[in-house]
Image (cartoon, rainbow, N blue to C red; front, side, top):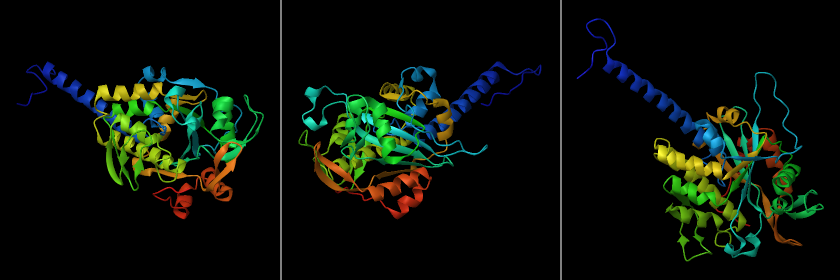
Length: 363
């Protein structure tokens, strides 16, 4: 039965006041959830290998999560993009480094050991803030690494820069290669993948190729698969059991990113306080960000990006070659420079149209 808002003396009734408070709380909650939905989807759900959505979500909810995120100077004196004219916005670029902090005895493959950056991505946000473009640089790319830390300078695999001189040297190496100005940098702990996937209740990946696990007898055939947290971690670590080697692993990482984003969008993570808290806490504890990053401003910048507007690519390569660092990936420098220029010029849609990405990696 409907409650009348006023009593016989013309005063608002207690029941109506309570109902009105509930209605206002519900409207406020829905507005927050809509914003949460956009923010979490907008830049990826939890950066694990993964993109930068968790950054946004962490700051937007409460300062509790901000306090869980570590900060360090990663960008040093790397040039920033020139400030756009008054009243306009320019594109944004963020470096994403994924590291594996397992104990060395847990890692069977010697090439996987050491504090190297197993994931190297740049996330580009268009100047109109409507789309994002995330491209990966193969971790075994043979490039020039400037002097820093224990390294005197010279050519080596790009992922070794992290081991030689930490995130600052890794960021400088990526900048020297791409000349893409960076607005921020993020380190993601690789082991956070399993916990994040658990926080959303598993993810679904649909792959156009077969993946054979080198760590167990698992086989993921062409098609769709529901991955448990342990499955997802095993899946994204595959390198030798997937077509294209390291390039295939990049494809796997991108599929799990998409699966996480889709699960957050379609599931009840955003409306379930326990699940949301679990995801954000895990994401926050798995991240280290550059000390210059303004998370509040970033949240506002990312709010209009939808899942469908996030595109992925891999830096063009020629193949592999033998080097003093072992078998390495040879970048197609002419093709790579086209990609890097497209990012700098905010023309990634045009680049993608001219360079459609293959579903199955080959090297």
